[in-house]
Image 1 (cartoon, rainbow, N blue to C red):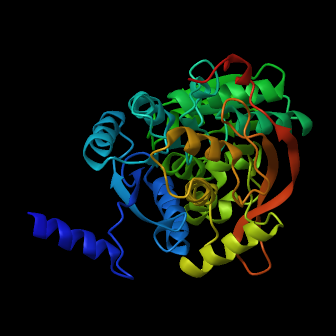
Image 2: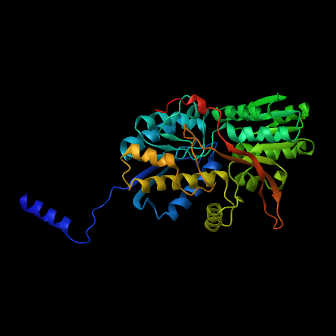
Image 3: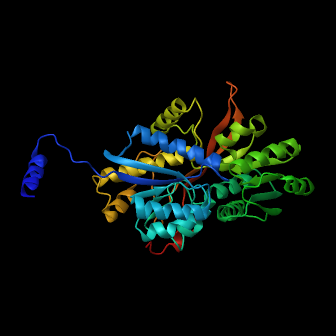
Amino acid sequence: MRLFHRLFVAALMLPGLVMAQTPIKVGIANDLSGPFAALGAEARDGFNLAIKQLGNKLGGQPAEFLQTDMGGNPDQAKQLVTRYIQRDKIDFFTGPIGSNVALAVGPALFAAKIPYLSNNPGPSQYAGAQCNDYFFGLTYQNDAFHEAAGKVAADRGFKKMVIMAPDYPAGKDALTGFKRGYKTSVNQEVFTKLGQIDYAAELAQLREAKPDAVYIFLPGGMGINFIKQFVSAGLNQNIKLIGPGFSADEDVIQAVGEPMVGMLNTAQWAFDLDHAQNRQFVDAFRKEYNNRNPSVYAAQAYDVIMAINAATKAVDGKVSDRAAVLAALKKADFASVRGPFTYGVNNFPIQPYYLRVIEKGADGRITNKLVGKVFDSYQDVYVGECKKPS
């Protein structure tokens, strides 16, 4: 035993000998099946581009990125998070697209003191009364895209509005946000089934209501099916279509094509934002993924990995020091694709929101074009309910 001890100590003193490091672990609960599959695939591509650029490291330290599909199912996601925490001993968490999943998995992550950097959902609960030091709504607060769209509808003089969203937490936040930005009563408020693909009944309602415009928050396959059916029914001839970026993003454009030309939408990011980090990201994404323009989902996922990388570097890889990690994350000292980045007291960003329009370019590509700013430095309305993150 003494001989083994002497040999072990001697080995440690050998020049150039490097002991194996425990990798920093990031649990990524992907949505690669289920109602948000198309959006999950976009997020996955954003994650993987960042991971590749960082050489599968975080802050220069070895890292392991555990990517598992949970299909947008809150119960399945909770089981996965339990495994990530108890078996895999993750240091960071991200991945879900849906707010229902974010709300389902948050409590276990917060209790285990695992930082959850959201690559998409920003539930009002986590922005307000249930805010938590371990939740970083790095992307947006759910209402914000929709509040910006409501302001656009009001500014454009649309007097008769029908608004529509799936019946789940983000859908409710969406329509609440739109009405706040619109600042007057809407004609009809319609909640659809999450994952719905047939909109015959809703289209009949629109035909009867004859609104000036319809606002839809129908992300992924839901939006793809609605817009195809909306145009096929000829309703686009007399009704203007408005959406958040989620319902008019590159994944939807690829699936629907020319019928989307002219659709207005709002987002906190656009691929044609003119600053260095965004140009670098867009060029790299196109090169990696067959000249495809990145979506909001891809851009957000990319930012999440870069934010984790910056925080890990700031603490010299000592991610077990949770207080230091939280402080580093809060500083948001990373080059965001959105430009300079600042969190409010509730760990949700204070940032601009933009108006985009879908156009067909001279090269024949149908894509979003940046029109201008709707809000300059938007902070969500729930921040005042976040008295003391815990």
